[in-house]
Image (cartoon, rainbow, N blue to C red; front, side, top):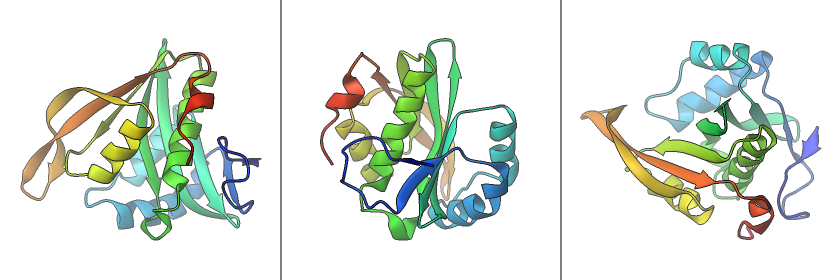
Length: 170
């Protein structure tokens, strides 16, 4: 297991990252169901892992408390899902997980990283902006919602050598 990338000493040593595995899916689904009104299915996660999408499991004292998955094609990466258990949010763990996913994109030689986010999720939008993502468009009626469908904001960041080291402090 490895410590989180980013600011050394900022997070407890009990927090670690390792690649997400199919054996993690029970814990992933428990978090997914608590975190989202319209969660991914186990099959979606399983398909992502079988396809070899780069991913992280975020662990605290050995227990899975978050996860993130990306796809990489050509020189672009797409953050598919990033989530920290609701009871663990507000401690900078989502920021560290996002940074770890961006670093995975960099390691896979991506020059740009995309993601979608609900306009009704201002906390996530603020996080993404603070990490250098910019809104580049909208996908109409992308997400299911209790009122039918909700647009997605499409955000992107350009990866330039050294950017990961210059991200704002936690």
